[in-house]
Image 1 (tube, rainbow, N blue to C red):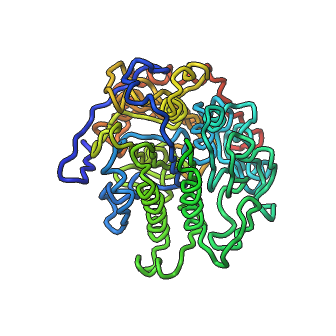
Image 2: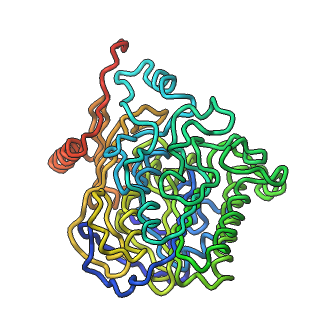
Image 3: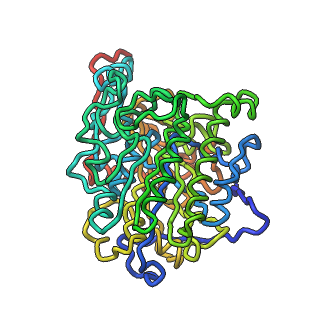
Length: 470
């Protein structure tokens, strides 16, 4: 079936196609002047959890909807992992989580305890994964900083060591904080995967407590506006990584009342208000036309994600397909949608190109591709494959699994059962019908492609659990 998300009376659908990185053969004259970059990353926000999707009428996001109206909505945008830390690392490095060997969220309860809990009673053990973003990796912020950008990180980092829940301030190893990875300023970024509290005092060593009972989402919005004001004459990267809408679901009471007690919807309301605050500041300072704005979520939603199946933690679409908007007046076509599949490693080369550093796009070995030919020129090469490797147990179907999408076809391989599930997403976006028996050659082709990719990136495969009993 065809998914319709038409949210304005007249929407031009841009049929977009991808080419092979580094994509230098496109209209560079449109991007020759370095752009300010505002990257807005939301935690756990679902594909359906935006007003413009018109899937949940109770959700109101007028500012995000306006951003979408002024830019391009990607309807087949993916996170490279169904949980947060790996996707976050992939955005910063342009590499798949499997390439980095950072394939699961970094556990707040500690690695040993987490692995023991998740592996208990399972046929396979949790695969090994690292607990931080290695300093030897080149991040987007480091490259932009070397090229004259002022860089700031605001909010959730979750790439700085395991065991944050046992700390009093979210710091496990400050050597792995954003300010060690190319950001001039770090406010809020530490080992926490969720805030100790959304209300001040935050118990976070990287964000100073100001007003008593201050709300964290508001604070990050205010700090973002302050940074823009102070750096309005500079090139800047503003990486606004909201902790919301992750648990604990805490919101000011007056906002909760607007949604009849639904704290999740109230948190989305406050997210939208602060997105609007940032957009208003850019307009006020006449920076809109030279500022690329990206709005994105780090994994699938924690609630239902119609018309998709399942949620965060699953390799079904509900766990990995996410909202994505690009906006840059005069360059990104307004009021448009793009149906081509894209994924989180694509941001590194895309944002590097936005900074005008075309000569540097070939210097870094990345898994992502530059999306500007897609957005600007509509290049039309063959489909590429997009991969997922999630050798970890969750309380979902299609976890402890790997997947590949090429064109309209998607294959999921489950490590424990060795089951193959094949779907045609164009006809069955809800992944209700397994076509592996009907199209065995297609299933075999995609499975071989997935296995070869796993070998290429040296993906860590889960081992048998010696304590498992049938």
